[in-house]
Image 1 (cartoon, helix red, strand yellow):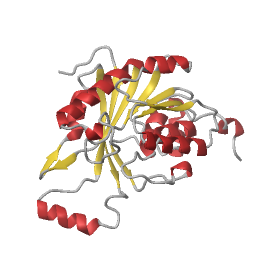
Image 2 (cartoon, rainbow, N blue to C red):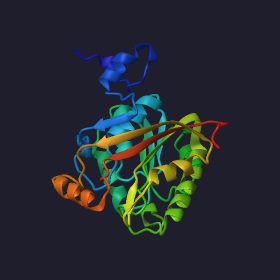
Image 3 (spheres, rainbow, N blue to C red):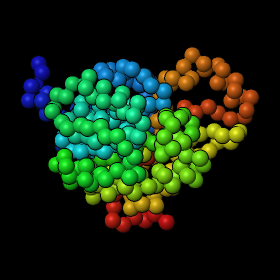
Length: 277
């Protein structure tokens, strides 16, 4: 029998009754995230190259927010984080620079049920210059409990032609500077002890592995944040390598490297003082 009272209340972690919760919601508690395939249910059935997988923001929302908290995504993309907010009873604001990508996000949110009647909104703009405080104030919020950040992996995938898009940064230095500006801006609305989640991968350029994940981690640690965890995610099914596994195996054998099967999920918490150098 379905508990109707429970059904109409968003899921929330109760440490006095934690075991049923993590079992019901498949909460990952170790640093290795093995995900067999992307969740393509509901409005997420349409797949776009390089998009966020729903399981990552889902895990973060279920771990680090309470029902009806506000979640902000400064690199919204196709709206994955906001769809998860709508599903899980959290309010959400997402900012996206590219109009065509933003329209996909809007459509997904319209198609997705809103069982908890939360406020979820898509905003077109550059997160490095967006007045997040004004946006939140107009919508009745003072701060965000969680920021989920999934920036482009520099120039690995071109998401559009806008020069402000991080995928069009001319150099790695410019990419990190632009990422830092966005980070400074969005952290203004992150609550004290709120969590900042960075999802990033590395890249391979001119025969050399570029540790983009560690560069962005270093840039993030320049801010008033303390590092809580570095998790490694492996998604077995990827669009780029699907049905081409032997081709990729040959390529890495020939070039003396390994192909990418992992990304980093880095968890930071806002703090007044940190022990970071």
